[in-house]
Image (cartoon, rainbow, N blue to C red; front, top):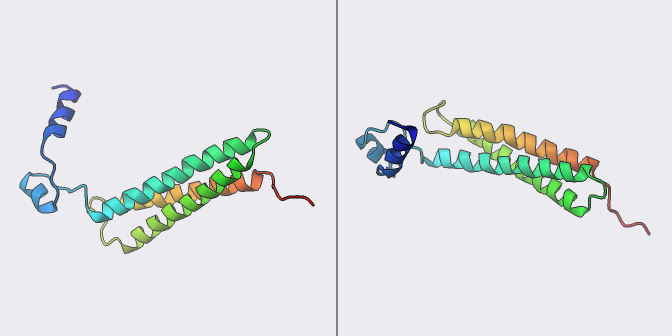
Length: 135
């Protein structure tokens, strides 16, 4: 059976909405626990911080970067901190390990990506020229 047929069969199968429905369908893990959703959203926010921080750093390196680079750097720092702090909190309150539905892997990824995004944003801020008005 080809990979496409397997993927199509999985996509056409009914999606379980609770862990009891998943157990009735023979699925051992439920992908939509609130803990996993929290960790996944935190990881996505942190990943956004990494991408925005990288773009801000790239725009600051170019000659004549305007205030857009500084704004993007601030957004990267804020998004990185929000994602990273949520990942750290989720790791602190998780009562199980990997594969238990507590979002441990997503929280760890959020923490690492959040730190990277904040670092990239801070680096872009320190390298951007100051736009203070001179009187």
